[in-house]
Length: 202
Ligand SMILES: CC(C)(COP(=O)(O)OP(=O)(O)OC[C@H]1O[C@@H](n2cnc3c(N)ncnc32)[C@H](O)[C@@H]1OP(=O)(O)O)[C@@H](O)C(=O)NCCC(=O)NCCS
Image (tube, rainbow, N blue to C red):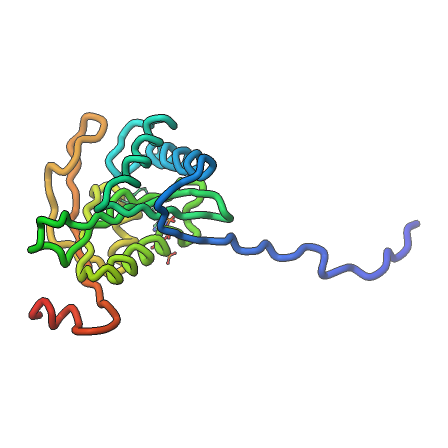
């Protein structure tokens, strides 16, 4: 017959720690980060994309893409990390210098998080960082567009205050099907100086 086994330890299994989230704007990528970024990008494309590509591109093509992005003066690349690993990215596109009339606006594009890193709040953080950067550069508006099939992204953008102003019925062709796309904008407040409402006369 077995007797009592002594006190039961209540501190046996520590709570799992929350993952570490970070987003940074990069002007260069080392080989390791580039490899993780290409893997995350292809994983997102395979799952359904939503940022232009329909077919997975493979490492070499994506590497060329991102190296090109880093060279374009009007484009800024943001990468998202989960516990240090690159799992997604977004781009901020500024108007070219000759477009003075629209210099107050910038575009958020190519935003995605790899399926294996979703649901932790990384996209929300990434979009906030892009908005902060746009505001710090003096932009008063962020524009973006998204396929109507990207329902998670749509919920996220609307929760973050993006206003839908239109829908393009022939926005994209995906796997032989025409897909509509929604267009959004959000006004930014610079945090100092005249408010965006005053500047825009609204
Ligand atoms: C849209 C996307 C970027 C969200 O990434 P994510 O890191 O999982 O998003 P977050 O964890 O930051 O979630 C933010 C919000 O999105 C919404 N959301 C996230 N996952 C969701 C899900 N599975 N169902 C419904 N809403 C969801 C919620 O509103 C959530 O807010 P909450 O945390 O307060 O509930 C990701 O699903 C993705 O890459 N999708 C494919 C690419 C795409 O559509 N890009 C946008 C067009 S360019």
